Image (cartoon, rainbow, N blue to C red; front, side, top):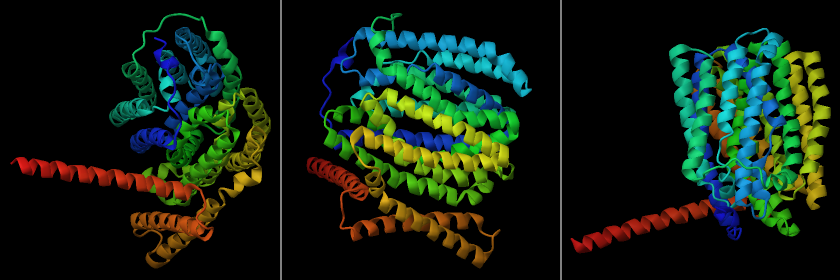
Length: 519
């Protein structure tokens, strides 16, 4: 049973990373489409208060889950040769943690409902605690597939989760118009994910803790860091629900999720391969520097137009897709869409720090950001309500980007200016896209009116803005002498895809001709 852990990893290449990214890309595309459809259906069937009610529960669960997170999958990936005992230990510890967390949530259900003045939180937290126990049964062997840059299982698990979620959530929402649609979808998704993990990689777990000490030596600081990081990003939901009410929280949560969706779904295919790829390069500093800058530049080239582009069309998208009841989500998307895209400048520091075993430094970073973020967020809410909180969140995000880039300089001796400069063409192209998009919207509104042909105006802004970004990006690249960068990688990938289809076409012709000869 040691087989997977002990196999010699194949040599790292751009093709292995590209194949891994392609599998994750396909899975994320499927998940994004299904998730987007599910969000549209739920937004039409449910109210902002429904979303806010469930968001209170999920925010509390997320904080408590992160505080007990063991990060065992990352520890298995980082370990040079994990043993059979360590896989069993990882499964045992994961299930024990899930059971203890479920018990804690059950005990907290009543106090939480009293704090928020809503008894409906009691059954919600009890049901979601059962879902946590289910997730604790997940197969730890899948981590070894990630380590070997094998990611087809990501397509199977994520796609099956998304399909189950949309079928259950949308079905209940359409039939009953109840917030239980959100909860039932989450529970079923966890169950499907666990079942799929054992179908993909057979594993017969045993209750065992032998070998857990070496896993903890890596994961302890990572776990603490994830707890602090989750508190960083969930604290605002907790205080909005408490001070502004569940309806305001519902608009904020949906707006935040939609604002993050373009950047998250556009960059996850590559980002998901970085930790195992950096692990393979950690002993070659020069190669690691090149790989880091290349990954950062590619992610930003995708994230910047996705995030800022969605913020650009938010005022048109929200009323058309979600309805007037969700008008409050517009300002959330407009302010956070670009900020989340800019955060991509430092998003690669997490897999870099993990690959180098610098989990303690990542924890110190998360604590430092938390110490700054919490009072700034509270002050923003106190002074300006929801708008003040959004402005505070943008400011803290930008500060965090700079802080992370300084950390990268310390880890791999890559200056902050160099990290900025590799993304200069992307930044200029994004500015061009925004200007062209605003001008297109103004011209369309001036010629046909603000209320006329709203769908045509939205499509026109999207298409013209996208063409402006692509054209200016490659224009700046050619003006700079066609240096190494995301543009060259994009052309290489497109060329490889064209060659693949060309070969498929030739093979089909050859088979057809061979068949004709035998007729």
